[in-house]
Structures are given as structure tokens and as C-alpha cells.
Image 1 (cartoon, rainbow, N blue to C red):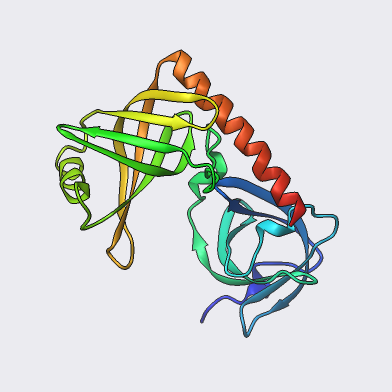
Image 2 (image 1 turned 120 degrees about the horizontal axis):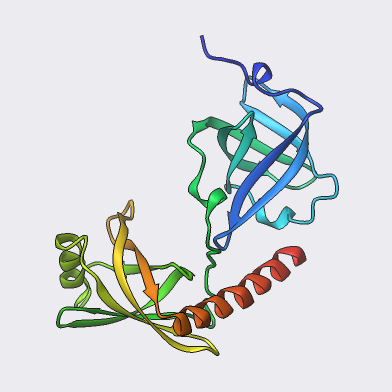
Length: 223
């Protein structure tokens, strides 16, 4: 027999709810107003929350329940926050990140130049921090398949990364693959690189990340 939500959560209590917005972790503490066991729904009062915009419908969220993490998705965020519970999961990595990670502005992108053996490939960054950078490669495009194969076959190798930052110039890093994930459609591959910069170039990335973080927070408050 499955455990009811009403046996896990208590109406009237406040819970920490975490998600990501443009790669920035967002956490808010909300009071649980009601529980619907049959539909696995939880309704939270917004109170004075200023980050409502981060909790759009279908957004993935984690609710801290006595240091266990209930995973679910937002159903509605109109008058209250309604979350459909799915399962308990491990504590998500983004909650304890040591380095701030941001998603670049698509209209002012960060361009990453990958230098892998004899191949050079320029792609927009999906996310960036002072310790790493993520990119998306589209399969079956010139050079991409060859670069992907080289990265897969040399998981511990270090490659040159040239990260072109808006307003802050180019930062050079030695990068190696930390994770490589294929999209559900099998068309795109997301590659996360660990990046080691010189102190001077690391400072460029740090300044960019801080400025972008402030832009994201400002835009979030306006939603």
C-alpha cells in the first residue's frame, strides 16, 4: 500500500522548495495550505514570495522534508503554488554548488571555441561558472560527430577551450569532459566541461558570471 501525502506532509507547516531559473538555484519557504491525496497534489500559499516567476507550470521542484527531497512539477502558479508530487530523490546537485552557474543571455551569447586535436568548433555556451562550462552539440553536423567521438574516446584528456565573454574578452581554459548526455531525440548532446583557468582569466569569468547573475535576478523579480 502506497504512503499517502498526508502522512508525509502536514498542512499549515512551512517547507523549503527549490528549483533552478536560468541555472541559478532559487529557494523559497512556503506554507502548505492543502493536500489532495488522490491526485498527489500539494497547494502552497505564496505569502510574500518575490520569486514566483521561477515556478512556472511544468518546472521541476524539490521540497525538503526532514532532509529528504520530494521531487515534483509545478501544475499551477496563479493564486497559489500547486505541485504534483512524483517521488523522493537524492538531494539535487544544484542546491550545494560551490560555484555560481548561470545561463548566458541568448541575445548576447558566450561562445566557446573547442580545440580538440585538429578540430576547431565554435558553439554557444549553455551554462557557465568559474569552474566549468556546458555546451550543446548538434549531431550530424560538420565536425560535430568527429569531435563527439574524440571526447567520448578520451574521457580523461584535457583540451583547449577559448571562452569568448561579452564585455570581458576571451578566457582560455584547459577543459576535460565531466558529463556527456544525449537528448531524448538523440539529436543533441550536452557536454559539461571542467575548466581550469589562469587567475587572470578566471577573474574574467567570475566578473561575467556575477553580472549575469544580477541580470537574471532582476528579470526574475519582474516576472
